[in-house]
View 1 (tube, rainbow, N blue to C red):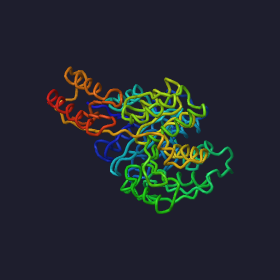
View 2 (cartoon, rainbow, N blue to C red):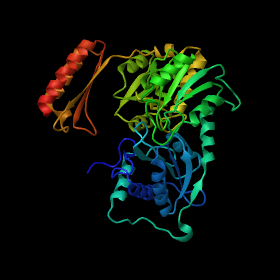
View 3 (cartoon, rainbow, N blue to C red):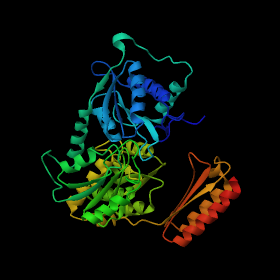
View 4 (tube, rainbow, N blue to C red):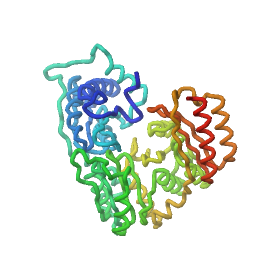
Length: 456
């Protein structure tokens, strides 16, 4: 039986067996019970914050989750349509016992997801998710069922998001009245998602002129030809309006992809380079290191290394980036997809906050984004997905290991080879990175041939 929780909560097509209201109800019961065992309420009944993005299925799943939460004697604080990082922040700011976000991030509208946050605003570790899954799958439900006044209540608190907005603004402006971005023109693509009100509000409070795209959600248009996975309209609008910057969020705004003043894309690796190098030069980068996954471009590693820092590599997934940051005392980490964590300001990736930090550097240095992004040279990458009969044992196979070693030797320290099994499909993924396209294609083809022969 496959694990219920992926790298970012429970996901699937909403109202199917993958993510049914019945499953949401059981997750609400089990999650509320576990989280309230971890932290005692400061006063009154324990509470969970619950938010959602703009998908049509959000209200259905929220109703089921709320019923489950209240059924174990926990209050549900409904904050409405908000971003994932807002739920994480409010779980801590409201002194709740945790938070629940209903979202499938950048996925199509028919999908949805449920992810939990602890009282301190962090995603749950694998071990706690495994406990939660055991409770959900258990044939016998032994969790509490209080009656009368012991049943949890629903608390409507949509204005709670103001605390989150004020927090994000405070990372740039010392005083709420300050307008450090006056004179800046920004294009913002909200993906018809959770940021459609919050992102423009933050940027306007900081003084920018904001041109907004994809801010009319209807329940089914989230991420459709817009947002961080489809930034073409945002890039075009930057050029049309002569903006200094373009910002494209995904459905729950935990990530961001930027465009410079020429409309050229600036991905998460470049954001890590811009922010990491700035913090390094100003003496504000703990450990002189940035955390990133094995998929981040080697150009990021070279740029940080040349500036006197280092890059800490992790497994794919923002939770593993966060683990490395906490273990090694780092302040900055993220993924190429634009999921960036500023641990001094947030417990999880936050696209709105990330855009704020980049624009802050732009205004402090007086440099255009194109020049800031040029601090990192993107090395060419060749990626191949190899269909296989089985994934297990590929990385231990002697012939495959020998072929990878030969490929690394051929690159002579000026590139990387990454071979990894897909987590969800019968594929072995190959990534070869270096300076010469032809060499990369030859290396990838040789590796593909060996993997096919060994894992067919």
